[in-house]
Image 1 (spheres, rainbow, N blue to C red):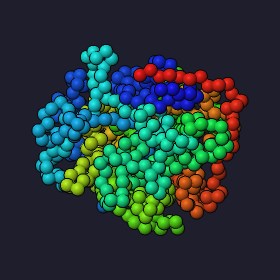
Image 2: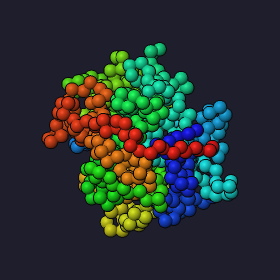
Image 3: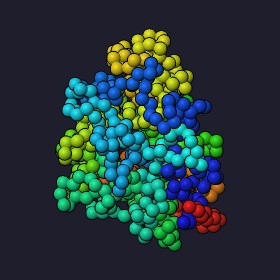
Length: 586
């Protein structure tokens, strides 16, 4: 397959043989690149076993028990006074752009019954449920281990996990992470992506989502998780529409461009928009100014800002993927909602009734999609804290047979499955004091409330046993941040790596592969509010949709939101030398 070098390859970047291996699809989620040593793998008692015992040699507490004691939410959700649902939703959409860890499956892709006949097989790592559990009436929660990556040369080594998608922030959730996925999503004409009824993403007959009627269908996108909740389907739909909007404008400006040229140029713009929104709107909602500066996460208002470092690995770190970036799970609302054009709630559906069900997106001839977008952009999100709502702590992926999971317990168990080092190791790595006791005085859990320290002592035998997910999520957040010091460190380093380890980062100035300065300055006008106004019949919106509409961020007419001037892409290639062609040999 041939690609023009100026466009990022679908699943491998033309960065040189060594660098290309770091972050392509089907590569390893890295235990080591954020650290000078392989924190995580070194703690495993046996090469292939998960982390299952504490410092005293006794079994670690059940993740479900930890979830019940530490992560159970109260009757009233704690709202974020500053940020909208968009902070959570962008985090989920972005997460699916940079990480997907496949789990082991049986013949014909069947899931393992790890609480039944396969319970003792190496593919399984079931979660014990306490006898007095307040919700589940069984003693076991199904859990299959993540698929391992073969070691180099198939030699013995520690178990490492696979990332099925590219680690780069490159729009792979929109376009897929393989040539086959991308081809299936394209029309092959005018650079457009396929759409279904009512300008929604096309149908996916292979998916097994739950449908309310014969008129509903499973959505197809660049990432297979598009149907998980309606608000995620909205995110995918928005960028399919934005791709096609831009492609039509570029085609009109450059009638001599063929399908491939229009498609690849549009894809490059969309990837840059996602990068820009992430670093200028999403991350400033997660971090305060000091953290943004510390990890070099700020973008310049105009012009180039070349930060590429060929020694910086953009590979997604295991600690980021299965623990730190899952902080957003505590921000998931109890419901999915539709909001009318005058910003009044029309419907609120408990989240447990929306899993793998695209009905809300598709109802009313697709108007549900617009109403969901309006809800995500305007309603207060939940505070990032240690609490997780019952709709996904007890009822995650509720099916029609009444089966469900606990997301907090699954997160803890996934960290153990991957051999992630416990909380104290990451404290030390981040230059923070490790806890030697469960109190919150010096030498203890200094970034936790005393009540939380007591709860942690109730379930763990020693501070060195505390799981990274639970320890990090239960920290007091840094003022102006959505996370505490440990997660701020892991997240900050990872997002710095995504930026500095990507030769195709939108702000870099490299002849022949990036944007012209005029084009880049247009990209830097982009805001998520602009994308929403361009693709929905919004009458008004606040400029920063990651922050609630109040004060200086009040509602304005969509006509007053700055727009990207695509005329800067008119026939610009005529002034450049012909692109070389890169052939990737499989």
